[in-house]
Image (tube, rainbow, N blue to C red; front, side, top):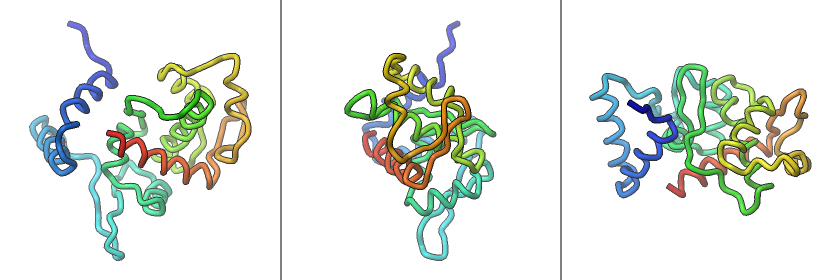
Amino acid sequence: MMTKSVTEVVAAIVKELTPLGAEERRRVIQASLVLLGDAPAMAAVPTSEGQTEVSDPGLSPRARAWTRQNGLSLEELQQTFHLEGNDCQLIVSEIPGKANRDRVRNAYLLAGAARLIVTGEPKFDDREARDLCERFGFFDPTNHSKYVKGGNEFTGSKDKGWTLTAPGLKQAAQLISELTRAT
């Protein structure tokens, strides 16, 4: 029997959930977790300001602050990443961008956001981001290093790793919101 990858399973689930409204999707997912004997990993907790804050023991305190500051919801995080322990995997079907340069930079932003979510630091290895570029089919060995240079979203190097800057953290949050609006 051939097993499906997480990406294939997520794509099939997204296809089934697409015609439903947000509340119906949430109910279907929660009911599925209950039927499988799992509890939802994250919960939304109202704050004193009346906003909803993402609360999860696996989400770093700095990541919770980042989600609150940028207005990211629990649903947006769950539609973008799969969190399991100290692992945070990107589960979207594509990384947006008008050109490969934009897609590469967005992959680096998402790699930094994923590390922030589990470690509390937006630091990531170049290999993590390159792997995303390869996985989504836009890695160009000839121009990749040119695409990474310039801009103010992240700083570092291929050898020492990268760190998202404040503008990069803001852009990563906007990208996550954009990705979830597209579904």
